[in-house]
Length: 356
Image (cartoon, rainbow, N blue to C red; front, side):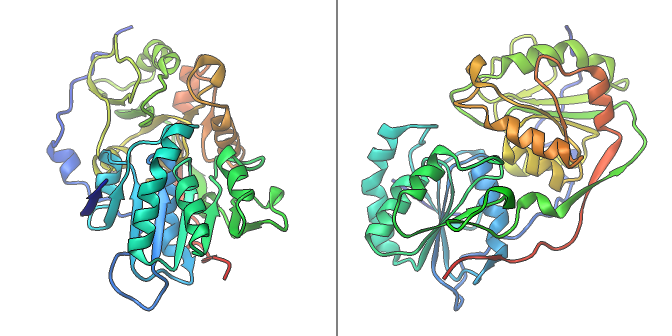
């Protein structure tokens, strides 16, 4: 990678780097690389987590296809793994609604944009989009903002800022709220379909609560400690990726974070995936064939800045691609039901046409 720095779950621990993980080959969409082509020189801008996962998946669908590509994101295990061999500009972390951090990023955005001589900027948010897109428009660079698939009912706060920024091309992943300003070019969810299989007691379980640095999800952990043992097969393995959540009371393989490649390898061999309803976690589970149990974070419990995760979970549940439950109400039956389906890709997704 080229970088620029400006109850009792007594589950046997699976050590990082074990042969089971290392030997799993997990294909994934290939983004446009940095090799020189005749396409437009493109700066891809996204916060880590679901925003980066979405932009990564979209890159190979863009029409016209990108030429040279550079990335702007935060530095963490996900971005280090996902963007290996890409040219990446790592910037300081911009938290949700971090207006002070957004302002501090503007000089770096100006420097990167001036030096890169880009033909276009494409972003999926979140707040990191604001300094780069607004500065790019001041420099006359065409900009494209794709609203998150998490936003099923309308634009996010970042999307509303983009809507007020002159000259930004805007895209919704839902036709029901697209209009003259917000174009619909397809959704990341359109390529998936569920098929029934026989339910079974899971032997390999992955619980992933995301990589957010400021928000705990202890409500989910407490509930899973109570109900998960009831559905596990003997000698089952459970991996917990907890992020900022206090891991107290958990036994087994407990991690703060996982490199993207290792998380994907674990999910690809899992019988059951339980996740916060972040778009990145949901997409990863679907892409690797799992129908996840999604537990939305709630602002009322100080688990996120708003309740947008309920929209993701509700949409995927309505498509039969996930089971959506409140974190403190999910049951053992819900966990077992999730094992009664697998997820397949429908077909190669259609091109995502960017406005000229």
